[in-house]
Length: 175
Image (cartoon, rainbow, N blue to C red; front, side, top):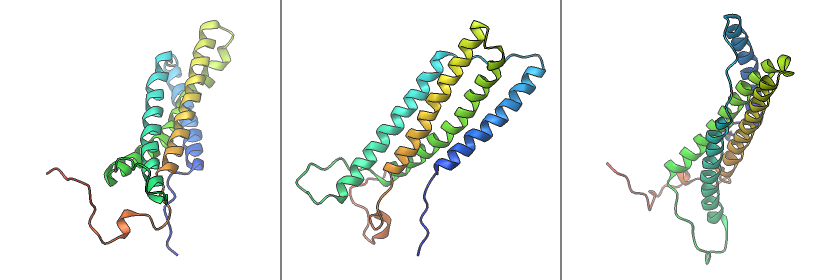
């Protein structure tokens, strides 16, 4: 029985988030001991995370749509545009990077929120703790989107294009 790669597991994302939180808390405490403050988290930090979530989900959905169409028996339906193997692999790698990167960002933002909590009775510090916690929540959504898109990129056994001996059709290579 051949062992099949299962991709990034949710336990790996949780581990990355925990390790990232601990490391970031330690580094930020060291930064504070040098007389510096905890970095501020602006609301605009949510925008790039939201954009990444959208890109990963749309790309993953396109791969899912193509892979799902190949499995259906109804050949009268309009076929989605063929996706090259390179693009499918790129989508899978982006999904896995989003999952692990989301885990690391959870740790970063959670560390900032945790370091702000002792002084949360001050309105401005509480606002920064809330911003960091919201960004940690959005990073969690990024990690979940990466795991979901990775799942969408999975082909059922026997449907791998690399298993057949025929050359791929419909792909043009630019030299």
